[in-house]
Length: 351
Image (cartoon, rainbow, N blue to C red):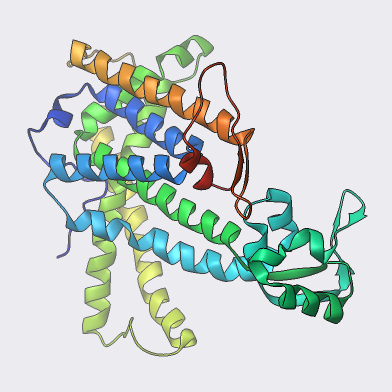
C-alpha cells in the first residue's frame, strides 16, 4: 500500500531533528510569513531552494519534493484559465507593471477604461516602441482613441500565478518538514507551550494543541485509507481514470462516501481509546518532557528574525520604488542608507 509522507513522522538524526520542537513550530510559522512578505522573485526562489535543501538533507527523500509540486501546478492551471476572464487591462494599468506587454484575447467594446474618472487613451496605455506604431494605429482605428476594457494574458497575471505556485509549494513543504521531523507528542507539547499566554485569558490551550495534533496526524491516515478504498473499488470494477465527467463523478462517490464513514469510525475508535486510558482534557496534567532552549536554537531564531527584518525592509523599498521597463528608468526608494539592487525591482512580485 502506498504510504503518505505528509503528516507522518520519519525517524532520523540530522540537525533539524535536534532543534527544540517549539523553535521548529516558530520557524515554520516564520517561513510561511516570509513567503508572503517576499516582494521579489529572488526572495521567493531563495526561500524555495532553502526549504527544499533542508527537506532533502533532513529526510533523505527526493520524491516527496517532486510530488509536492503537483497541487500548486494544478492550481496554477486553473488560475491561469480564470485570469483570462477576470484580469483585464484596468488591473494591469493600475499596477503599472509591464503595461505594454498585455495581450488581449477579447474586448468589451461597449465600455471605456477609466481611471479616477478620466478615460485612458491608447497612446497612454500602449508604448509604440513595444507594440509598434502600426499596432497602435490599428487599435485607434478599430476602437477609437479611448482604451476599451480588454481581457487577456499579461505579465502581471503570469507573475501572480508563478508567485502563488512557489508560495503554495513552500507552505506545503514547510508543513511536511515539520511533521516529518517532529514526533506527534512533541509537536502537541510544543504547540501547547507556545499557546501558554492564552491561559491567562482562560483559554484551554492544551485542548487546542491536542486538536491540532490529532488533525495533523489524521491527514496521512485518511490519505492511506483513500488508497485502500480505491484499490478495493477498482477490484470491484470501478474505473477512476477513464470515462466522461459524469462517470468519473459517479466513480468518486464510491470513494468519498466510504471515506467519510471510515473517518467517523476512526474518530470514534480514537475517542474510545483515549477514554479507556483515562484521558480527561479538563484535568491538570503533569509534564514528563521538559523543553530547554539551547544556544543553537537561539542562534537559529535570531537568524530567521534577521531575515524577516530584511524582507520587511525590502518590501517597503520595492513598494515605494518605480520602474519603467520600456525606458529602463529606475526610481529606487531608500530607507536611510538602506537600498536594493535594481534587479530586485525588475523581478518584483505583483500583489
